[in-house]
Amino acid sequence: MNSNKCIVVSCAHPAHSKGRCHKHYAAARAKGRVGFKEPCSMTMCPKLNYARGLCRPHYSREREKGFPSLPRCSKCSLAVLKQGLCPTHFKEARDEGREFLRCCLESCDRGVRGSNDLCETHRQREKRGLSLETPIREHLGPSGVGKWYPDSNGYIKRTVKREDGSTTVQLQHRHVMEEHLGRKLTRSENVHHKNGDKADNRIENLERWVVSQPAGQRIPDKIRFALELIELYGGDPNAYDEEYAPMKKEET
Image 1 (cartoon, one colour):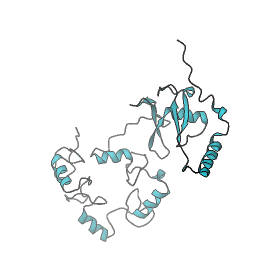
Image 2 (cartoon, helix red, strand yellow):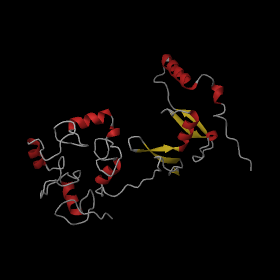
Image 3 (tube, rainbow, N blue to C red):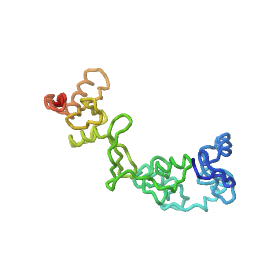
Image 4 (cartoon, one colour):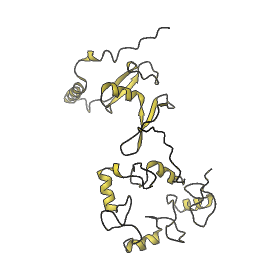
């Protein structure tokens, strides 16, 4: 059960959903305000956040004054929107690449995904009304790579950290094939297990299937597609005899 209190200032009841108790959650939902997760930041104002931490009336007043109570953008004199930047410079930074945009919490160095100023983990916590101060459990080692584990479908996978601080899931059978080839697999290349055992990721048990196909059925389309395959895989089908050789039965 969530031990946090309702985000409505005058309420001492425990939070039920979206950071609100049962009563205030039902009231906010009835008014279509479930998405507004915090009250207005102005002292003694009971209204809910509309934008930039302010309710609609306070937002309108502050906007007319140029948001004097908000910090200034690090690149110009306009008010900050996110990440220490005004709306224009934040959009420019996001379009150029999000790798240098970090979660706005000082204790977190994860990259920002999407238009939020929080990393995905803290964004989900905020969405569910959970505390943002609770430390994130790290499942990764010092090198940014987690341990291999089986998922519910029988595949072996692990979590790895990207350069921007976010994480992604890596499948072991694709990783083994990429290490064997010395290159990344293309989107059209799938890796199959010859013996049907998804946990058996020995290279001799793996083979590639290509799922791409020509855009049309005209002769020029087929020729172009064939030339692309030859450029990627070479023109000698016998070169793949070892990869597609059937698995040998183990002696008992």
